[in-house]
Amino acid sequence: MEHDYDVLVVGSGFGGSVAVLRATEKGYRVGVLEAGRSFSPEDFPPTNWRLRRFLFMPRLGLRGIQRITLLRDVLVLSGAGVGGGSLVYAGVLYEALDPGLREELAPYYEIVREMLGAAEVPFETPAEDVLRRVAERMGAAETFRRTTVAVDFDTCVRCGGCMVGCRYGAKNTLDRNYLRLAEERGAQIHAEREAFLLRRAGGGWEVVARRPGRPGGREVFRADQVVVAAGVLGTLKLLFRSGLGGPHLGERVRTNSESLVGSTAPRSNVDYSVGVAIGSSFFPNADTHIEPVRYPRGSNLMALLGFPLRGYARRLRAFTPRRWSERTVILLAMQTLDNELRVRWTGRRLTTSERTAPAFVPEAREAVRHAAEIMGGIAGAAVNEVLLRTPMTAHILGGACIGAVIDEHHRVFGQPGLHVLDGSTVSANLGVNPSLTIAALAERALAHWPSCGEPDSRPPLGSRVPTPLPRA
Ligand SMILES: Cc1cc2nc3c(=O)[nH]c(=O)nc-3n(C[C@H](O)[C@H](O)[C@H](O)COP(=O)(O)OP(=O)(O)OC[C@H]3O[C@@H](n4cnc5c(N)ncnc54)[C@H](O)[C@@H]3O)c2cc1C
Ligand code: SF4
Image 1 (cartoon, rainbow, N blue to C red):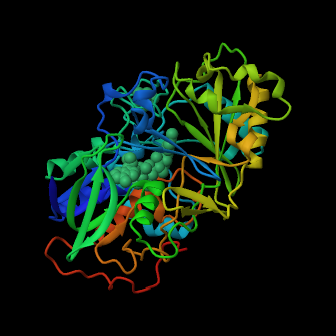
Image 2 (image 1 turned 90 degrees about the vertical axis):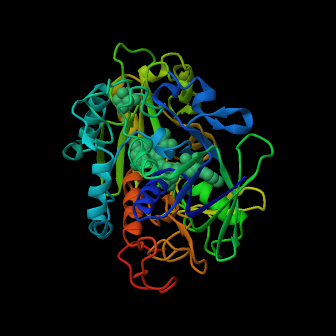
């Protein structure tokens, strides 16, 4: 089967969804390829033990919302499905800390917050209590704050299940706003289609797609313009395999200088799983940001990724999955420090090298030991951090950065009609949850697109004009 569009968007996460709606509004015929499936609230699993509905590993017949990718130097968590990472994310919307970037994106941040129904969390829970006390002990009590999240609190039942998929329709995922509006205006979403190869055809582009985990059945999509928005790993894989993106593709990939640690009480009469997935945060110093993260009651799968820190090794049994989410406060630390790794292509798969991104964050280790004391618990960290000395991140960024692979309008150097619009274009550790910034960058880029059939007022592709955005 063959399909023709003006604009074809690969990936339906934060960059992709914004691109789809705004290009549709500008009069283009838009199609979307999304490797994952489409979900309704009742499709999300009751707990993350339902692997078929939670994990995305199509070769094993698992078609859920959570990807887990182990590369040589990093373990990456990311999303899959129509709505991309918004299906599995905690919904936290933070502006970048860099003042220049904030100023440039200010109007677009407003648009995205409005579209996603952002609201400050109106309550605190036992996990917030722990974080507040950790912040006090680390001399940063005044930086404690509740998060702003994409949640409708009239509907939210405070079950803590945002990262397993919201079964109550309270989390404002991208399929419920940007993508729904785009579909109403005629955009066509092709779920379970993975873009495999991208090549020039005539004056435009041809994309070969396949059905993940299902043999045969390749389809060809044609478009004048292609927006690659497949998330960092998806975008790098597609561009490397297609021989596009130039010599700097894969450079400056960031983990957000991230670390995941956790405190688990051996037994507890306090239920730490209630609330939204991330309800608060604090800054122990100017570079470091820490949030308490939770999974809902019964969702104990992630216990398998935990391992006790030195001094707690004898108490490994506390990490058994039984009631783990009710007994545990995970702490997610992110930093603005400048460190990175490089993603390369072996010819068949992605690999990494030249890592300066840290395997662990000292402030996170200090915070989790305080949390363990407060909870009468055991301090642990992600197993790859403790045993393999490699980082784990849910916020991978970079690899197709502005100034290196794309220009400030997100157009790939030397490849007319090819754009990149996702987390891979962010060339710094933001030190906060990045989705709001990724969507705002996409709003900014699309605001400068001409309407269909109108002249293009942007400078010619490749002109290296000064940009207010951070460049590689
Ligand atoms: C558990 C978890 C919790 C998180 N919580 C937060 C949070 O609270 N706040 C926050 O800001 N961020 C959070 N994040 C991070 C956030 O989800 C990502 O930063 C964000 O989704 C990245 O947006 P993106 O546009 O780069 O791509 P994504 O949102 O990752 O979307 C990319 C999409 O492309 C699809 N795709 C990949 N390859 C192909 C291909 N070849 N063909 C077709 N489709 C393809 C993928 O299936 C995916 O749906 C969280 C992440 C995880 C894993
Ligand atoms: S806590 Fe999260 S998953 Fe539960 S109802 Fe609220 S938004 Fe949905």
